[in-house]
Length: 169
Image (cartoon, rainbow, N blue to C red; front, side, top):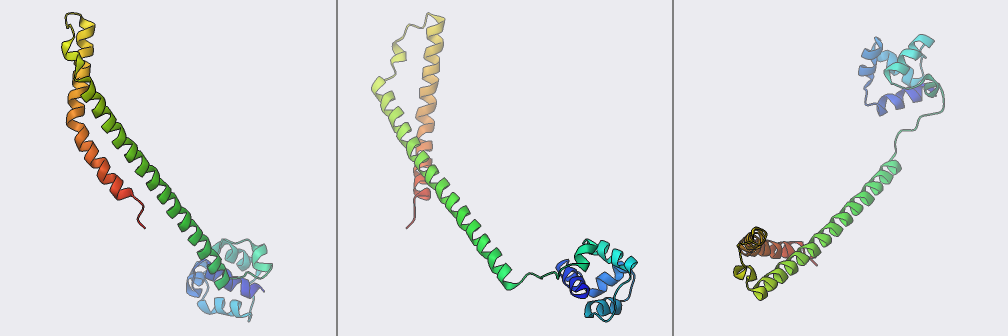
């Protein structure tokens, strides 16, 4: 049992017999004899093995340590597959949300354009002698000026985004 545990734990830690021998200041053949059950380490050496393998002595002396088998790898691969499906589902959901947000932005831009055309820049007829009215008129004019110049670019970008984020069958 001890011999099987030393071998299984050494392998699970990724050590060769040579590497473990160097850590324990023994020759490789000593490790081989322990793992074959031809000899057993003394109590001091058992403590050194425990430290080198970062494993409690009770586990070295206890039940047989089972190395990961093919079934364990299948279980891990199934879990990874589920995680990948969940990530793909999240990505699809994000794309749908982005798609509808872009559609909403297009609708908002077209609506604001329609409102601005309908209003026909009413601030141009205001009396600008009052400072508060002058400030409000400048703000409205700046908004309209920026909107008319930037909105077509944003509209084109959102339309391209809608086509890029649409569901592909």
